[in-house]
Length: 357
Image 1 (cartoon, rainbow, N blue to C red):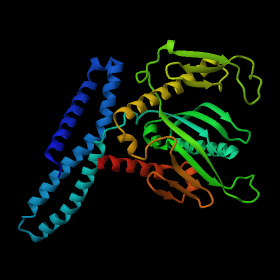
Image 2 (spheres, one colour; image 1 turned 180 degrees about the horizontal axis):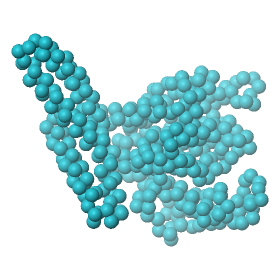
Image 3 (tube, rainbow, N blue to C red; image 1 turned 90 degrees about the vertical axis):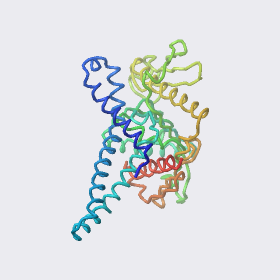
Image 4 (cartoon, rainbow, N blue to C red; image 1 turned 180 degrees about the vertical axis):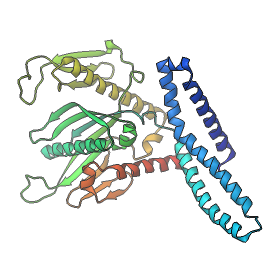
């Protein structure tokens, strides 16, 4: 059974949810797109909690009915009521636990798209190849979810890997699924060029940031220095013809973003601005966390991107996430995009930490 205080809070949420439904049907609200979007977002964020609370109330009615049957004069009826009561109580406990999780403070970025940045670390060419492996893993996972992936910027190595690749992943709940991927990823394997069969260790860093909306980040145009320059990299008839590459410097923070993938200066500027806004939002939130609380970072490790979070061991076919002590012997499948088990375990660990207070 839930405490009276918690039940009262749930009743308040349910009443607010019903009020939101009425307001969303109001023609006056429907004509104000910004207001409608704001209310619809709040309504959607509470829908699962309200539905679960409704199931719990119906279940508690059934439990009360079965308790009354325990006093029935028919022994067979009493036994049936007792048996059903046991399964109903188990379901009650399950729903109560789900409600406690749903009541946890919600990450406001969970439903947002993701700006994914992967950079090769120590390990030379092998690190670049590993960065490419990680990018393919995330792309395949995104495809399995029906999400869209757009490369915003890439710097390739001579061996077909990446020194750096930045991409936009668009899809419902993308950030909620990928937010625990930030950190240093380490790989242990025998490179194709290694004739002695020795295992090499290299690394790549991953940064997952929520895509910033205009309401999240305000940028004063006077704070930006925008430089154009000629694209460089792989050959082609359009390279070094026009100054289409863009470099944007945010003067107050010193953040610099460059993009040269597109032939159009306008498109390169738009892509660079997406990355800059995401980095500014990420920095603002990180600064706020540092000032007021370490709680969210403590959910799964420190969240520090210099921290080694995971090891991919090819000789043993093993993946180990060091933050939660999880080891899976499904390395090939995970690198092929089958990340759901891994992500579920990380999210469960985060919830358990939060519930433990």
